[in-house]
Image (cartoon, rainbow, N blue to C red; front, side, top):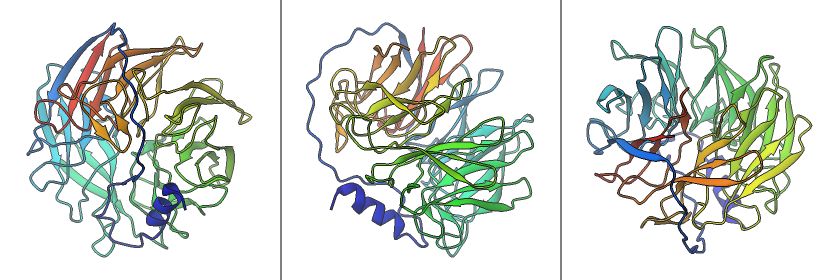
Length: 408
């Protein structure tokens, strides 16, 4: 039995207390030889988390307001050790907006935030909430007052989801959409909607079959109200899927990953261009089993744009979606590969920030050393002038992760 199938069984067996939240992938990977790429960008660490009251180990992609302030979450730290919501001003001063307790307010926010027109922040926690289940929450936060409102607490199997690891996406009338990686009618996760009154609707119960299981990445919403995403498991080969979900809850399978050469286990979500093409990454598979960057057209035809080698170009992605510029270049972060002293089951090296051209040429923009961050589980945010911002889950001055900036 493969490690992937064993792990899917672990997720499916979760019926209540989702406090055991860290996904552990016991897969021993071969080490890759490291070569050096030229670094062409200006990299700076804006903030190093201490792991104390300021938070630690961020997993999520950042967002930015019009004044240049960055907002994000950490999975640990704070006064209770279960994470915070933070704000970072343009000069790197951090303000903790909210500290989770792990109780009814939730704890362990793995996903990022979304912001409404008045500045309220919305997100998810992987555990806490319902006192019986502790299966996670959807919350709203007023950043001015620091007041948190739990919009919904998940009930777990078989009622609804558990362990939401991604954030939420918000439509024009304020409805929130997301996915929970566990729970649901079959124990393999759900896609959900939560309106502003806190009413939850289960849009789809993943069965663990051809439709997939354990949707971990962010969903993306088109103008017609369709949602697009990936699952980490399921499909014909148990290697994950890419799907479209209509407003009425109909799932259309866009692609089933097979491992070689198209990739397997997409950990992050997808992004969508104006023509309806989808772009994403896989954690494994591809030409050398170090993961891929892929494109799916509207008909579901997949093109592997790049296969990582695990060397100087990076290897493995462990969350976060790509970002795309006006010229069609894609930007992202790998969890391993590159260089530095980081070594995990996902391979040696601390990861890289990369750019991939439309022609499939990869450029390494920064190689993490550990001292400046490492092992990012997030994507990057790109502002209007081309600056990239991101987080790493480890490394930095205190070993608890950093917020970084790469200027063009």
